[in-house]
Length: 406
Image (cartoon, rainbow, N blue to C red):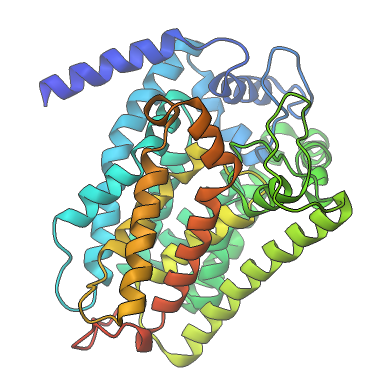
């Protein structure tokens, strides 16, 4: 333990030394400082990376980072991410043990799942991102729900959404599939997350923050703008790369078909809406049929969030740990031959994209895998699989009744 802590401290110091204006972490740190100082947050600045695309509640939370100098805050947060990576694996394992019907899954699923998603955790660490933290908050909320702590579960899902909009699908899960007490609790907590930044900043500045956030961060997404760079692994970006020329003159061309910009935009929007509606319909069907909770429906929520999001960078994909773990717990022998072959191919695909970092496979293959959206199509196939297995009648390997949950 002493050696691990010493190694973590050394890595944290190295990561902190790389922080400077223009990094992702510097942007979060600066948003917290601007928020505390009462200055406008949602403006483009030459020394801050990208537009501020986090909600006002996130900027309020980033004040915790701004208490420290930039490099100290980065070092502390990096070390926290190392600890949270272990916590994410343990919480995922706990959810699986609570939800797994029949015999407990063995020791190999978490090990293999961690190996298949290691590059996403490394990317999150290298960029000092917040995605592992949000993943842990969501996992904690799932565990709270399984323990019968409805208000705590609602708080976890809503706060994660208030920091970054992608977890909103877990709030929808709570409203459609959750117990009434948890669903009711989500409303006041969401109102508090909306009002707290306004209270601190004052009504005039706080309401202006909401308007600026919508104009700078949400308006383009609502109008169908897509970042189609090869690193964006959302469904919309995959469709644009497959049908449109590169957005930058020096970028590689990954077109398979040719389509006009309006057509590509429409197809991407329709595809995202269909995926989201299919999830909601599936959750409603599960509720009406009285199917018990399973890890597969939570995996479907994680995958839906990534597929329909405007941007899905690799650092965001730390949640695939849960998805791969869930798929690896499926016993193959009771399945029909075609299903076994499909799940085997899916496991191989996750293994390939999981280790396909630039340092391992080289720059050209790394671009090829990202540009032709192998990860997107793998997630889409996994989404179809977990949506199917979320229904008990398709889990043909179950020989006994699954445990009941409150």
